[in-house]
View 1 (cartoon, rainbow, N blue to C red):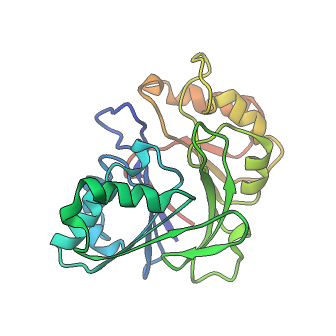
View 2 (view 1 turned 180 degrees about the vertical axis):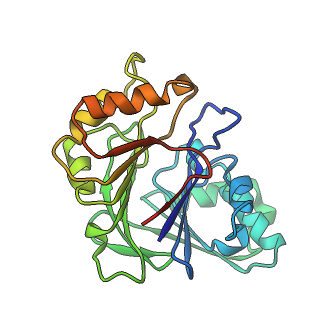
View 3 (view 1 turned 120 degrees about the vertical axis):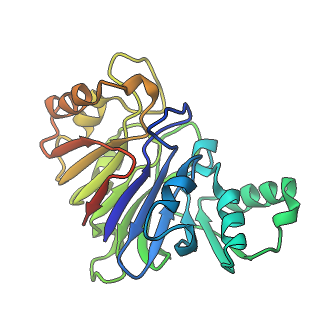
Length: 255
């Protein structure tokens, strides 16, 4: 399975970071996780392209995670693709219905399926096995852990965890324990006063007692510009002993 970071940014745009978006690909199947502004352009630059993504999995419904959802639907329609599935937490159907209510000319253009999932049981999205857990953020949402179709591992033991937007807390750390890669919200440096997002020291402290191979800091606000190395060092100094990297658009990680 390969992870491609399409968007490592936030609701405050910067030139080199699109809003939230991540592509999972195992060679035969692809899954797009979140679809913020700028993600379609990044996706168009991959071998998969928007033509190859028929399932989108949403962590939550904040605008910087869903802004390109209808543009993706329209692009697939214009490219002759016939299907799109949108999967996400409770409220996903209302979100999609509301968007189509504004842009009603897109309604019925392709076969659109919307499915709401919960943390109560594992599920499949784009034929990847997925398990979810609730996050701590200003809006309800999920973190996800993934196992590719070619693996015998259960989703709860899968190689990739992705936090969505969330504070750092022990339950999230336990959810990611044993993952080869964890993509975690780390929106601001330590000296920015913020709630609903973690800073490097709180994130490192929360992960001090778990085993994660590589930690990618993502959902980076403009405040982090030029301070990425400082932030990764702060995570390690706080107790996390795995590899720490700041995510960047276009980064690919093989799992």
